[in-house]
Image 1 (tube, rainbow, N blue to C red):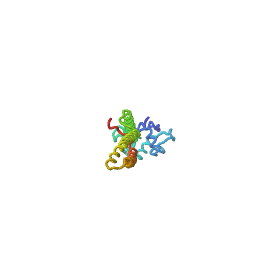
Image 2 (image 1 turned 135 degrees about the vertical axis):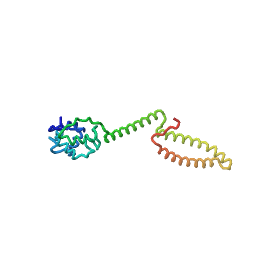
Image 3 (image 1 turned 45 degrees about the horizontal axis):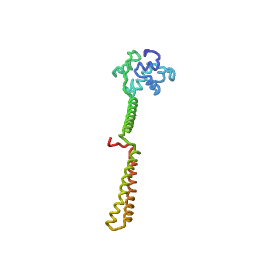
Image 4 (image 1 turned 90 degrees about the horizontal axis):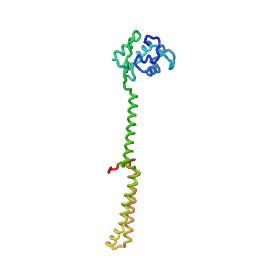
Length: 213
């Protein structure tokens, strides 16, 4: 179909000027193509090419002609696009195959997909490391910490009786009194440290790395 034709479909007009049919629909929605340039309404509207070309010359910046977001999508040099706009009513040049130029929206979607893939990969690596024993869950770490501390305190408390006997003999005081004083001091200290350990355990991350792996 020639640009000299009285009317064109939006797809045919888009092919001749090197943009997508969606871009032509956008021009219509933005009233860059309007009025006498259109025949019919809505999806079935057709384009009067000579009128539409003149309207686009007036409404588009030179850098925006035949491309989205100011980027030319035709492979011809800028002068060719300008000549096509200027000479469209009188002569038709062979259609130039458009080249694909990155669209900012497409780039943004691709970047988001890459980000999600990285997140997924990192999660899978953590899960694999967990299976191999490189990491342990925080709950497991807390249990191990509590168990180790409890064992340490148990050993220390068992030794208090022997220490109390030695102190009682050295200072000539009843063994019972020495044991009572030492146990009370030890249990007060243990209670304080238990609170400190609980606070430290609460600050552990979701996973902790096993240094031995």
